[in-house]
Length: 266
Image (cartoon, rainbow, N blue to C red; front, side, top):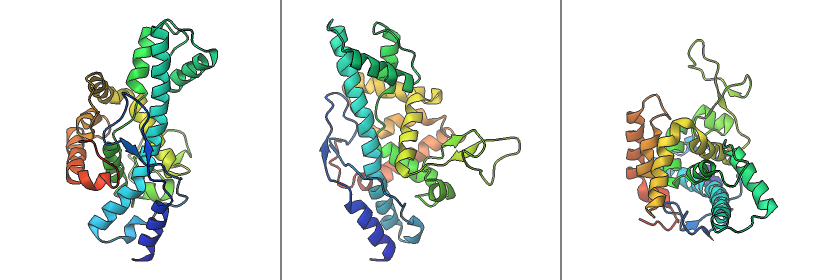
């Protein structure tokens, strides 16, 4: 085992193994068991790993716990939000602290809510405050970061190609077209990149189709799958359907490898 693989193994060894997902109707695909992680201070040098399967496994083993941990945070928000909603529907008095928390949550998801009777706000909360299937996040992170070897992943901890729009907010793309001013965002660590990705999926107007598919599956008491939700990624890339097909192909080819030690619900 070379130095890089030892370093990756050491990072992965820091991850605690299991945490049951405590959310009665919000367990995402293959998250019956959730791995927790400590944020790694340094991203492994995936470029040093020459064997393709070894590199893929190392990448998924590194990213998976981070994705699951960020998803867990969103699921805890969703669980608390649904509990408040259920109590409100039953006519129970809502604690002021819970109400304040709920309104702050709505604001963070770009939802205007100042009244518990606002049915539209409740609908938007249920639509937006939810997890992203971990295989979808893994496939997109591998695709957007070239398996963790891209300049933006290495220099900016950006594994999803997120843009920002103020001068100095990130890294200027070498191939940026004339007249464009966007930069590729920089993050302090990979967990922030994952958190930002999930937030974009849950708030961005262009990903509403993905959220609708997710809600339909929730309403049908089905676990939202990476394959199904990938259909809502037409706005993620200029390649549109070609991008969706590529992400789905990556999920299919690496389905078991993505799961690692996670007990999958198929």
